[in-house]
Amino acid sequence: MDYSAMIPVGLRNEAVFIVEEEFTAAHIGSGSLRVLATPSMIGMMERVSHALIAQQLPEGYSSVGALVDVRHLAPTPMNARVRIFSQVVEVDGRKVTLHVEAWDDQEKVGEGTHQRVIIDVQRFLKRVDEKQRQIKA
Image 1 (spheres, rainbow, N blue to C red):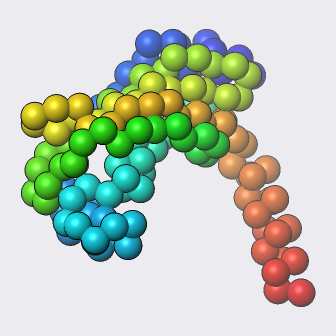
Image 2 (tube, rainbow, N blue to C red):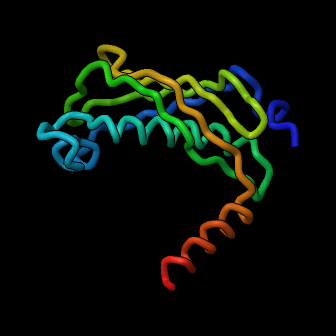
């Protein structure tokens, strides 16, 4: 399957999140302050990137995160808005590389690269089931 025809370079998505308690460093344990946690910011970037790719894939296909190279540049307080951008910069076989950014209302707070791999969901779940059977043994 030619994924580069389905997912053109330059394709872009964005979404806005509010920094609620569940997204803070204090809440998830990655720090002690009530500011946007780095893992939460990365999760937001993955969510926006996944949605972008999912819109382009046929039924039965999805994508999974494979690489994250992101810098957290500035703090964002509770109740602030964070706008996440994701843009396709390369499609190489099943690998999709995206440039991701996070902005609050004052400045850029994060940026980097995120790579996702396109999967056949049934085949992927078969591998998961095989591993699950090994755990129960």
